[in-house]
Length: 141
Image 1: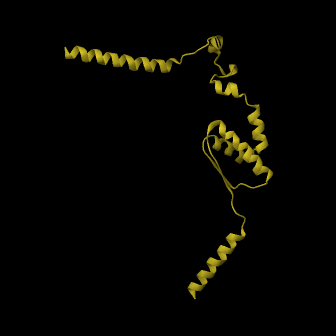
Image 2: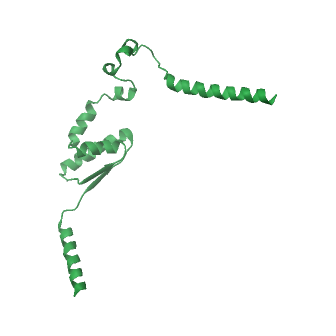
Image 3: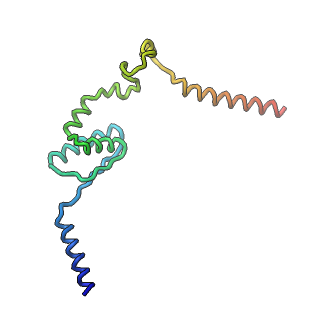
């Protein structure tokens, strides 16, 4: 009798689970600028009026997923992407208004800027190598 009651309970729970709407998950991949293609997918989801329950993503896909989860529609994300200054974004240079006051007089004065922190590391590494070689030569004589 107990087994029959347990089977009946499992049957009722499974019927209840089937009767509910299915959960829909969305996974968005990464890939830098290729992640912008997700905007078209999100617009199609919006036009189909699908309700997404779970969103996951990697790299650019996680950024798009976060915007979508925060309530931005596909059209709003397209508008944001079109309004961005992509040339300035990928130039690696800060905007003039974000430059420190002390550096504004020299901002954009030179065609090429050498990052001295990296250069110092390379010079220091090469200097150490030459010193170690010199010490080795002196000690072997």
